[in-house]
Image 1: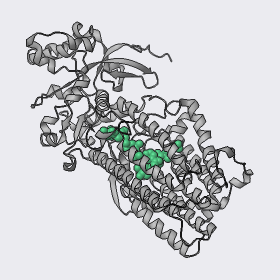
Image 2: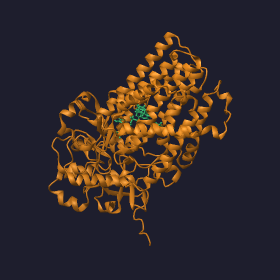
Image 3: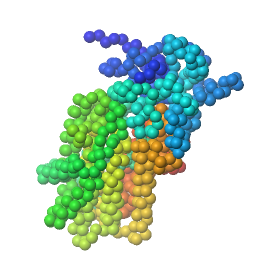
Image 4: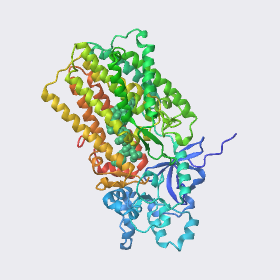
Length: 620
Ligand SMILES: NC(=O)C1=CN([C@@H]2O[C@H](COP(=O)(O)OP(=O)(O)OC[C@H]3O[C@@H](n4cnc5c(N)ncnc54)[C@H](OP(=O)(O)O)[C@@H]3O)[C@@H](O)[C@H]2O)C=CC1
Ligand SMILES: CC(C)CCC[C@@H](C)[C@H]1CC=C2C3=C(CC[C@@]21C)[C@@]1(C)CC[C@H](O)C(C)(C)[C@@H]1CC3
């Protein structure tokens, strides 16, 4: 069978119809996918979308806009204008100016909902000649405006009365009511809107996103390196002198890695957590709207799960169960967990091949088996209502982390014949317990994080949740078992203060963003300023999110520092978490920056201009 020739080529400037409307915008063709027969196009404000050939026309069919086309935006701005044009000029500002002007005080805006719906970043629509002729007489003023604005990126519409045509031209990727923005919905009929959202969602899932983590070669590397690193840490921390000068640690015989009983315990633990997860206790929370417009429900009973787990573990210890088994069989438990995470990732990869397009994450679809296996492709893999990603991220590994820390405290007491754990061990245990309990108490907030909203579930997260978290985040406690580090009272007090400051920033900023994403009209957030974006969602630009672009990372890093300090400075190993975490968060931040740039276009640029630092004020 011969394929029809590709009509538009990469780099062509064409007119792309906005899905669901009759309005066209100037777009540049980025790519063509012969499989889906879709063109990836980029709009003037930097947002990408995929379009069918029938939704694309050559610029020839549209009114010639010679004046603005021949000029750069900079020149357009500096061009002298007749006084008669001054009013129109203000409505054809550049994207950046638009976003700047559109920073709204949500206190005011929530009171003026109808007005707000019109204060929005928009692309200037251009109609076909035919359509334009029809509306010429009726909308003289508007047509003139369009002529003026052709080829510019965005505009702010500040009129109070909504004109249907204007609303049609809105540049929305999702239904606004699903975004939770308390602004009126589109003027289009609801049904049409939903259908359109589904279609856009399906199209978007086929979009190829840039490859992360060093691309395909990187994926091979991480697949081998990450498990090897876990084993390296586990073997190193057990040594009397776990310094880098003793690298590499002696490799034990292969049999030492394997213990069937350890595998049995890991499976039991996961099943126990799964049982608690499905127990109909606690709230059913709604996730963020998916591209299909759907909202998934999650059983957020994490706090219940950790309380029941704690009671069960306490009862088991009371019955004489020796938890120091975890310390003595750490290597074997890690191997068993690795095996489970590999099997789970294989299952996830296979099922992602059969998933419907709208169920897939953007990314993880490179076509390279290893990369896609590593990155993960399905966004929310579920077995009936059992959400695998949510469960793995929040339960076995996270609660397992606390169980392991507790076992290390018991092992320290046993090894040194103590009646109580050391101060350092108590600090590490309490700090990390607080972190986990807080995460579970505010479990709903995880539904607005990157992992849950955007990342596919594959090896990286499965391994991260089931192996990396429980077997490397416990390094400080493990280290302290055989490397005691007595703390003076002032040092102890300083570390506690650092932890509390970090925790405060972390919790407040995460809660602020979560509350805003769930209900932008929340009266508790009415004092905050926001930037509207073309998707209908807004960005916080004051409060915590106006201090730096990732205040939550700042708080998290301060806490990480407080976790390492009790271990002292004799070895680098207990500082591993701090070093890893800096790398992880800097990388996550840049990943998020480019994702948000793609999603929000010029509004994101404006946010970055307003909030200049990423994580540490005035430093980074
Ligand atoms: N201990 C650990 O190992 C780890 C802990 N963490 C912690 O988990 C938490 C979640 O982190 P993570 O998921 O990486 O990132 P965030 O919770 O910061 O989520 C980023 C998303 O927030 C939204 N957003 C960004 N800026 C704004 C703004 N100005 N206004 C409103 N929304 C905004 C965007 O999503 P959208 O606009 O689409 O809603 C963006 O994609 C953090 O506290 C982090 O420290 C993270 C990784 C590892
Ligand atoms: C293996 C890779 C190198 C890295 C894997 C990263 C994962 C371990 C982390 C990605 C995001 C995470 C979060 C938490 C734990 C670590 C992972 C899974 C989190 C659940 C910890 C508790 C917090 O309160 C939180 C905010 C809920 C965290 C969310 C992100």
